[in-house]
Length: 236
Image (cartoon, rainbow, N blue to C red; front, side, top):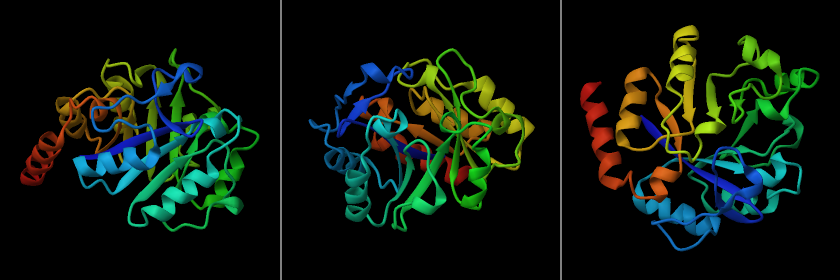
């Protein structure tokens, strides 16, 4: 099980995401650090564990209200040994940042069935996010949900209703994807509450999870992550 910390960026600050209500996201209040500055939050996460992958959601770009391109470029340069999965809404393969540690996250909500063929230009070198709204509806290009033709190997199942909710992961949906498409690596996003949830996801066949709230609150700490890693190493 690999834990991937989440950095939701809005108006140049890391914010607390909750159930997809982006208009009301506020700067993060964390037990790990006293700042919502992205560099300080990353350093606080790295003091917790040796994370080698982070997920960044550029909420301004996703909502078409500006972007954090310059700030993200500084982050990429400052942490060259860390891979950053970046969802900044609509992206084209010809305009990606020139950083080896940048990986595009292409969210279904940012593409329509009319623009979906643009994904082909990425050569499946991206992470797909299948996005579900707060009321459970599939967001964006319907054809991305109905078949695997455009899918890369890594796919986030993003359930916005569970993000920051404390309700636990979307167990049923995740189990269904694992059952129907066993050859893909599905990544849980939304609702992870504690180390027990991470272990249960691992047992389900989910080997990666995006996590924010449980790390910031201290519910999942260094000892928990180390214990989970040792347990799964022994099991393998």
